Length: 110
Image (tube, rainbow, N blue to C red; front, side, top):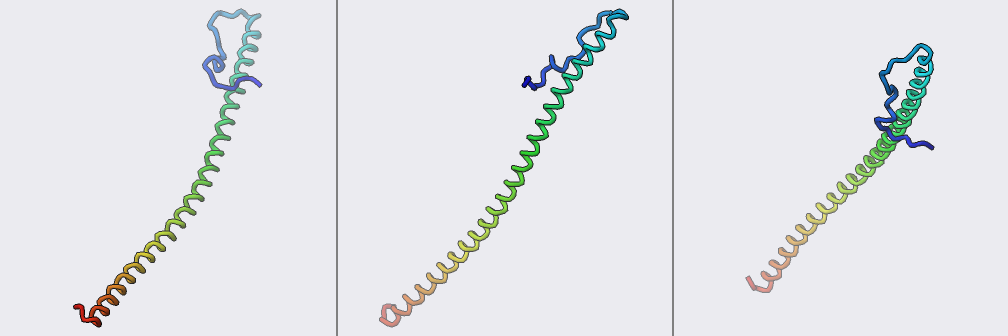
């Protein structure tokens, strides 16, 4: 398979401004057409490759979006659980403090 990289040389389809006689015109036109076809082929291959790459990037972006949504859901659930644990800890601390105060009162320490 030939190299499909775009270069200035490959895209150059007209290579001279010399005078061309009537008998050479058809030959020069044929050369120009062949070079133009080759340049078009390289350009089309590059465009098709770019289309494939863009499609792959779009697919990857969709997968990334799905993963980010899942992570956001997990993070939201984690935050709710953390808030619940913090509240439980505050309530338990308050209850322990009240029980400790009640025990001290009962023992006459206060």
